[in-house]
Amino acid sequence: MTTPDEDPIAPASHDFGLLRRLLGYLRPHAGAVFVSLLLIVAQAALDLAGPYLTKIAIDEHIATGDAAGLARVAALFLLALVLAFGVRFLQSYIMQMTGQRIMQDMRREIFAQLQRLHVAYFDRHPVGRLMTRVTTDVDAVNELFTSGVVTVFGDLFTLVGIMAVMLALDWRLALVTFAAIPLFIVLTDWFRRGARQSFRETRKWVARINAFLQENLSGMTVVQLYRRERRNQHAFAGINRKHYDANMQAIFYYAVFYPVIELLAAVATGLILIYGGAQVLAGGLTLGALVAFIQYSERFWRPISDLSEKFNVLQAAMAASERIFGLLDTAPQVVTPSGASGTERAEGRVSFEGVWFTYEPGKQRAGGLGGVAQHPPENYVLSDVEFAVEPGRSVALVGATGAGKTSIISLLMRFYDVERGRVAVDGKDVREWDVAALRSSMALVLQDVHLFSGTIASNIRLGSEIPMARVRAAAEAVAAHRFIERLPQGYDTEVKERGATLSVGQKQLLSFARALAHDPRVLILDEATSSVDTETEQLIQRALKILLRGRTAIVIAHRLSTVQNVDLILVLHKGKIRERGTHQELLARRGIYFKLYELQYKDQEIRAAGEAQVTA
Image 1 (cartoon, rainbow, N blue to C red):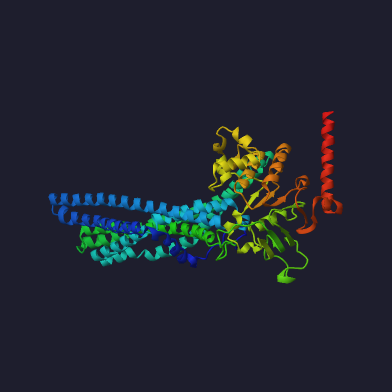
Image 2: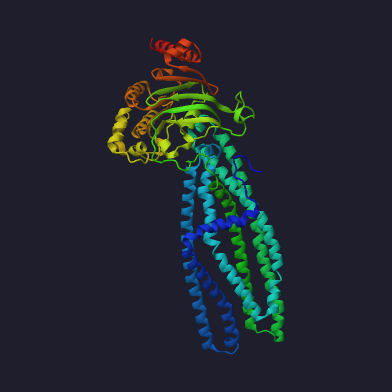
């Protein structure tokens, strides 16, 4: 049974399906794989030559005192070793190169899938775990391609060749060697079952370590501010211990398996010496044949041991591929419908028509139309929301934290889909729009601004082909140009990770410039001025009066002073629209909005009195 934050684990019966799917990644590199297989066959043939040359040297030259013939055999033996070295080098180089290319393809595919997935997927899956899919799990699969799936054919070919030569030399002595094989089969089955589970556990705890590190390193300022270092250290030690225990379990299986393989090989060699030595003494077998048989016996167990190691690699790859394919097989819930136009651009009419929404679909109570209760259950964040905004007009969403304001924005941009009702842009359901075309018609400015590594200009463009003149104009319009020009390289100044070298207010201004540079038909502001000072906010407010002309604007704000001039104010409470109207109309109604305004006005009076007292 898996916890909600873990990937489901496929049963062992799915191994062949997983392996077949993994082998599909070799198809684009079929030429390199074919050459590698030929080199492996050549390598196996060269490995078979050594013991046979030893037999010839002993029986035909050492026993007869033929020094010249012995030198020729020794030269052939040395040549076989040199050729085997060259073949091994080429085969290893080709497969390592192929493995790196497959890793490149697989990581590109995983990253593309991550960008296609719906926002709700990232709500349920920690970033650290997803990073593990792209890094550690892909590395485990790479081992399968570079030292497993192709070289296993060389081991099999070598094994079959050795068995054929041994049977040809003396079939009775060969059967003595093969007598230990049933014990090997039993041991391998025990190792397979135990090692697979230990690899699963190891992968799980590696993912949790990555998730824990990502969360705590990103929030290091909070950790240090609230002195959580000791508690976090204890928590990390617990996760790290679980990872250690999982690895130790895998090490136990290794520690038993490989020594027993060596023991079986030693037992087989002992049996050969006992039975073969007796045959030599009786004249039924030459000394050279016995020596060659011992060498072939050693080589016989080497590919078996290698196959066991390949099986180990296979188990690690299976455990990793279960998680990789689980991610790749996740169907995006927000997709563009077939036939949608990718060139369509919105005019700006927005409407919500009887919208119900929950972040936990499937948990709502039955009843009412469409399986939705007439009285909203607690897990619904929006219930029966209905309003419309005409192109070029503005609407403000106000209400207490958790009232559903940001959820309305998320549904409009189709980060999530509604449970019931319809969100429409220009009269067409957002689920019928091309997702890229819908979102390119909008711009969203959030309270928590995310900046990427790059330059100031690239963070305003965000990959779009926006001319520099328009980038500067957008920055000037929102009063960002002044601080940008004071930076060392101006618009070419490098931005550190998440904008670490910029203040919160500067990042907020850049997000405004970013939104306006893309010339959206619908501009969405989610607490967008909460992090700038009063002077900068006044500059932005003046700029917005000009820039919002002809655009639909949706504004979320807790500061009611910033929404007094919008065309319509919607007051939300517990997921429902309780009041609607202009600023003056809502004040005259003396309802929820009036109480919110009165509380803020009193807070301002208290702050002003406090400042006056300090000044005095």
